[in-house]
Length: 128
Image 1 (tube, rainbow, N blue to C red):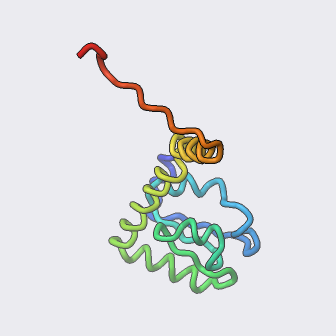
Image 2 (cartoon, rainbow, N blue to C red):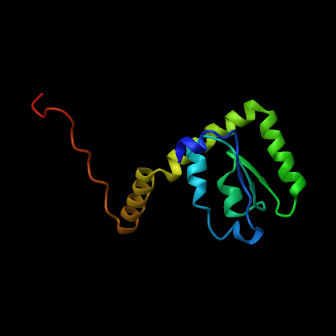
Image 3 (cartoon, rainbow, N blue to C red):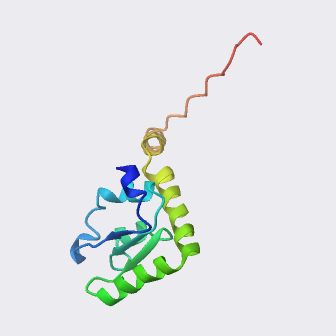
């Protein structure tokens, strides 16, 4: 899947207007991981629009001309495509990578329970 998504210059995410704040599409994490920018249909202030901030362009629902212009903008601006693609990859690694999610989850649980983080075990030969 990763190889397939990496072929694209940009990713398109048409969304039903009412769905942009209900859940994030499962394909979004793979789109981020590909390091390519995203053009999504999502109203400003929705979860989807907020999630792709800096890694793509959110266009208002029912505004096909604006969606088309956003696609053209990214296709015609290699530097912007690259910048947003790098941000997408960073989002994948910092927000959606399994170990990152589990670390944040563990940290939050420890905060709620008032349990300190265990000390890291020393690496290498303990006798040296």
